[in-house]
Amino acid sequence: MAIFDKFQPLNDSHDFLKSVGQSPSELQFDETLSPTEAILNGRRTILLGTNNYLGMTFDDASIEKGITALQEQGTGTTGSRIANGSYDGHKALENEIAEFYGMQNAMLFSTGYMANLGAIGTLAGRGDYLLIDADSHASIHDACKLSDAEVIRFRHNDPVNLARKLERLADKPGEKIVVIESIYSMLGDTSPLKEMIAVKKKYGAYLLIDEAHSLGVMGATGRGLCEQAGVEDDIDFVTGTFSKSIGTIGGFLVSNVDGLDIVRLASRPYMFTASLPPSVVATAREALSRVPAATVLRAKLWDNATQLYAGLKTAGFDLGPEVSPIVAIRMQDAEKAVALWNGLLEAGVYTNLALPPATPSGWFLLRSSISAAHTSQQIALAVELCTRIGRELGLISCPLQSSAKVEMMNVGAPRKSSDSEAVPTSKKDDAAAQA
Amino acid sequence: MSAQPSPTDTIQSNPIYKEILEQLRPHAGADVVFGPDTVITQDLGMDSLAIMDFVFDLEDALDLSIPEHRIAEVRTIRDLVAAIVLLQKEA
Ligand SMILES: Cc1ncc(COP(=O)(O)O)c(C=O)c1O
Image (cartoon, rainbow over all chains, first blue to last red; front, side, top):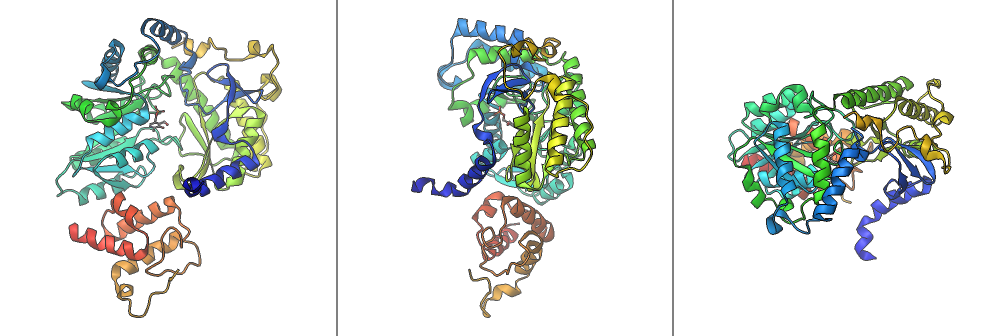
């Protein structure tokens, strides 16, 4: 038992969660009905915390391509591309991502987490400097541990603080690599890109941006925040993931910097793990090919995000600073946060509970992620339930404005055998079909 | 915990030590007693986020950057003074 003694504080906080309700890490869905609904503990539940921004997980064409690849090429690659060679789909997908971003080079990784490990951990070597945002995703922090570079944090989204830190390094040899995210995963706030770029240019630093939460979500053709801000020419490296808007799994690095291919021979998270299976590559290729034209889905996604944000704001909740497909309620009180999350779950709405130290400024967060596949009734219902439970808990004090009927949608009700027909967004989801 | 330094401990007159105390105060628990051998995490009830905020304030006050691996090595306020003295020499 001694080997696990060091985890006592972790055990204690997990025990606390279990003593007052469900454990977020132990939830198990009985059945997933669509991108926005599942059966959980025998109850129909709206999924409002799955990062499934475009609702692509049940996309017919992607599923078909995946099945064909499974049948023709088997279930897995059983090795890394360095040791075992590539399948044609790997290179094709790399070419397609490079073309999508209008960049010269692309590299695939097995997850977005590994893309950050493999990119950041390799690009910055001994004698170099990594300057990372204080609210960076765990994969960026872990990448720093993998790198031999010196790591310096700057205050979250603060170009002035970044500039001071680069200024202090101005006379030091070694590359300076600034790492930021487009949409930060906890509060949904975006990076002040133009200001960050002005700073990185002034000091001759490289800039790597993780577009995990903005691929397919921002920009006229879904390339993300850099496209939306019109600054793509000033970005040196982009990392991203297929696990959110693309609806499958996998990560990538794209760049216009000459010579990127050498990273393949130096990046351990690329070299020493199995490459993506053909079926995953096939589904990613199909979903990615649809992103540029998915303007209807993007518009619906932002409408839904605005509806949720405005509804919760009006109810009096303390939210992240801007409307985004990640909407987070910020709370100071751990017990109320846990109670809100459990209350919503019992009422039939699944969100994410995020706890310090994984959250900025020690907030307890009820984090939602919105999908283009959500109907506005589902969003209205989520707002209503949040408001009701939030009032009961004393988190907010506003009167209840009823805009959706719980009964109307059958959410939270025990599952009846005939229910699957009544699900508002079926597996052949109309939103995804518009893409 | 030996929060109070001995009268012969010269660290108390070190300006870096004084600056650290100044910057620590708003981040630490209300009625904590500081001393050179105070363990920053344990004795002051600071979590990793509070430490990060404190480090940002200290960096501004001293006009220097404290890299992550240096922070990781620090246990006591005395360790932090030593780390900063070294960083100032290297700068
Ligand atoms: C900002 C950011 N980067 C990277 C990742 C990792 O993505 P993946 O799920 O593909 O490993 C995530 C997802 O959790 C993320 O939020």
